[in-house]
Length: 376
Image 1 (cartoon, rainbow, N blue to C red):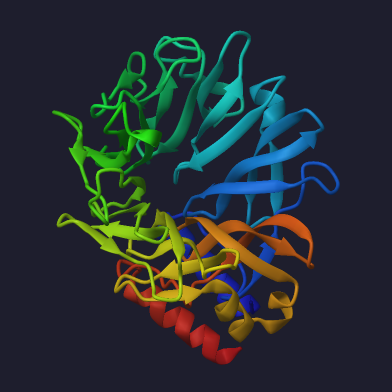
Image 2: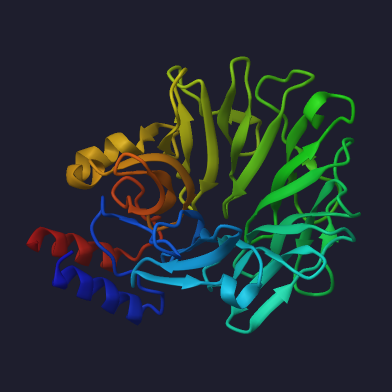
């Protein structure tokens, strides 16, 4: 990135009172460093400022939640302030609030981290385990908790006012909430049967009142399953569902599940969606492992390894990207891959030319960025 472009981005961000993400060019990729030398890391969430949260190896018996600021390349071990035991961070919103799970004296509980010394223990629905999977910008957390010790999980919502509230379920007695948008619409999975093996879970949408809405499945069989993992501001939902030969990523926009699978891919999964409708996940061909993938708003898929090799071949020679776990509105992606042929690692990738920023970016900023790029 040139000094001119960096200055323009940071200056405009300051003028417009938005958090600047002063980073490199599209195709730049960094490995998130370990909490300890050689320790594995898993990035689960990313916000629009380029902050990644996840979990990392701390010692042979302990995993710690972490926060990694991509623009400043700063890694923070959250585990030391959260718990003396295990902790994991799964999502971060645009104000920097984080949710996940941590060990407590008698429970493993969901938490909401608002900054050093500002930790909300969300407790449970009456059992001994809860987990915060997602939160929105207002700070509402969605996740799951059991209602009795070692009992089945039930989806919950926590607004910060009073205890977490259960969302109910379909006929199977199990539900999990994986995603929530700023309107408070929650998505996840709920079992539909107590007799079918696996519970035949179906993706659901919950709008804050009334029962869950069953989003259905792709192949509509009696044992078919689906699960919704993310929802964006416009209400588009993504996840994956069973097919006759495996399972496929889907997009839901109000009129049934749209199959994102391709003829060459036996299995695929969609884990995340940004405001512009770009979807992150992975797909695999028969007999092969997964590769990281991005679907554009028209449902065309790109193999991230192929794309990276075309824009940054030097970096691509060190990486095999196998999954996208989160994608922000500025084209930053986090996920997992194989680094230098054998080490499992977590990455942050600038894919801003593949995943352009939404149309709400001020026209003046676009013009200045284009001019700066031409001067490089």
